[in-house]
Length: 130
Image: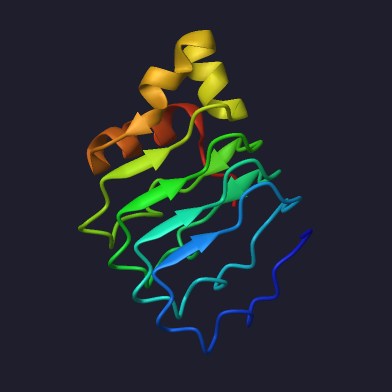
């Protein structure tokens, strides 16, 4: 899969787990996941994503786990997970901005379990460029 249409999940409000790993996604339309209010877990690992903005997960308030490892992320909006009170894990290892921040030791620091920790890492090493 190289791209996702913005309306792809418009009538899929009951999706709880979404696996989109090992594709060729380089970007995501801003509102791709807007209707996935029941989404708990999403795996976008091993794609070619370069940036994420605050709108990508704006309505996914049940989200607990996000796997983003193995992409080419250089820019992430630190507000991306502001509405996710249940978020427990964001896996960012093996991305350009995280590798730059942590080098080969990046795997340990890339498993973000607290929102404040996520914001600090992102603001420092993956500044948004939108």
